[in-house]
Image (cartoon, rainbow, N blue to C red; front, side, top):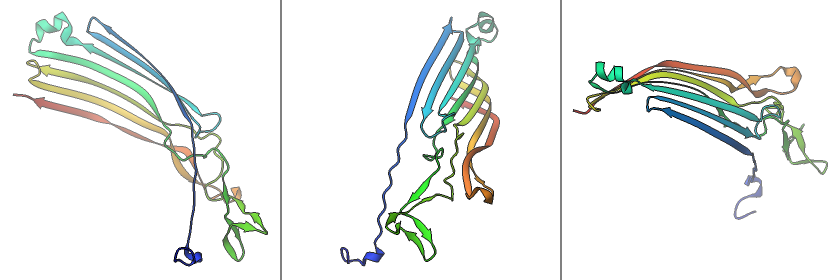
Length: 212
């Protein structure tokens, strides 16, 4: 008896995992005459969660805008507009939110399975260590999930901001997303998490506001 409970009904477990992450980031912005704006960014991320050939990912982005409302020809013709801006951007981002150690062959410790016993911690006095045949197959080329997005739009203001409107057209495509793939019986494993699917979203958005 342990603390008032039968010993066969007590259970304890522990878990320890770790991973490393490093980032480098740079940005360049240019504004010419308060009319033409350009922005460039670059980000390099490294994570220990990926295979030896895919630990690092580079994720650039770019944006540009043209303030037509600052052009003399526009001011003279469309005097009601206090702001009219055309803009666009494109960028690539990465996701590392996934389980640790997918790039390694995994083993179960203190979990022996043999006839007559399905959870032995040892066998003949030796700690039981068995391969994780469920989802422990090594994924040497496991990589970043990537998302490429672009958008094109415009911002408008009338009567010094009394009425505003913005319009955007966008496209977002996610690639190399993790998916559980069933493996052939001949591999000895049941399944593997690997970069195998993608999802795309696109559409248009419009927002109108008034401040009477």
